[in-house]
Figure 1 (tube, rainbow, N blue to C red):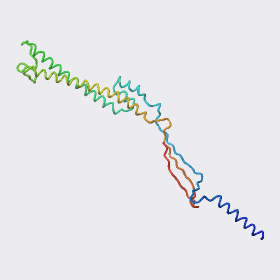
Figure 2 (figure 1 turned 180 degrees about the horizontal axis):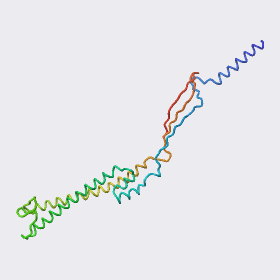
Figure 3 (figure 1 turned 180 degrees about the vertical axis):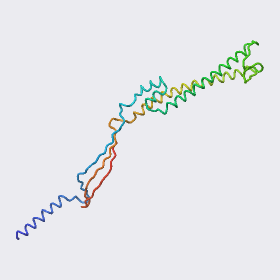
Figure 4 (figure 1 turned 90 degrees about the vertical axis):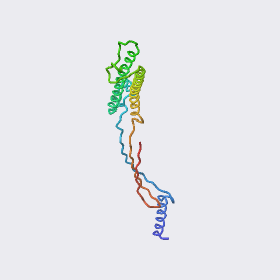
Length: 207
């Protein structure tokens, strides 16, 4: 065997080992190092800027709407004062009618002919006339119930203002951490499958 033939055989053996070493097994993918490009968007809300719920609770207790102002829920302030103003109006109105009919009932039932109430059917000064004392008593009790109901609704609205401010402060701190961010990862990997080189890409969102 000549030297040229020996060199050819040696080269073929060397080439065989190279192919075996670098070729993937059948049906197996060969992955190569991938590059990852990350874009990170930091959260702009700082926990140190959030209002303290207890502080907000005290503020809304002292002045309705103050806690909502601290929570930066400005649109709620006119709603709160509009509701309170409406409640106060009904308290004032029902209280006025209650006192009016209460006084008229006392004058009607005092057995004194010289005392005449404004609802007297003959000598009364009001545009509304009631012939019997039972009607005055009924109206008095009606406006007293309305007055009590108006006071209860006003108190409930006031407490609701406090609860809303307190819950609003807690919700602003809901599911928030210092390292909250959005990461967009775009891995780029080259691999071969059945001896066919390919390129693959992807997008990964990390919260």
